[in-house]
Length: 111
Length: 114
Image (cartoon, rainbow over all chains, first blue to last red):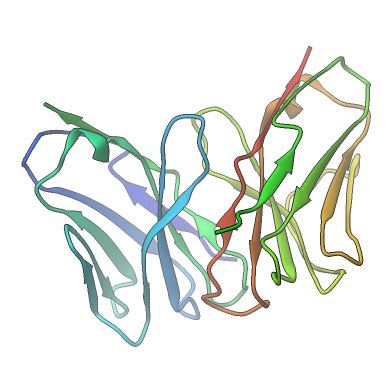
């Protein structure tokens, strides 16, 4: 089955800095990679996703890059704001319709 | 826009009791997924249903069962509850069972087993 590794587990940045979260996956059949943001006690919410026929996707301050050869994908948040503080999960699916989640990154943005 | 509805939002049970969690998907969504999330952990997939049939099975204990009804709502039945079952249980729904079909998560049910 799929195995998704996510790093770092905790990321602390100053407001206005950039944040980068990296994930690797094992199943070469995976071709859909969503990113979720989860605030404490709340539901995971999809913030951006990328499919394997695309190398990069951007939505305002958020971007995701995908390197299929190396089997890794990254989330980039620019100009971070305190409200970006949350746990971010990457996921991968392809061989199965069910996404395999990474362990999560706790992002803390200090004002 | 209508979202996924879960009930109850909070549930407290004693060990060895049973619990039933309900999920009402977004209208027209025909696929439902159940996840369990322990404190500080990622969501663990339990089971999913497409068009009222079980489609995938994850790490769902034998003590748990689930089904999807004709109106597409789903129920997760949990018996012989254990302390370790205390967690957030999320239901998600999607339109169709396909790769890249976005899953919309419900607000979750927080189950506490005492």
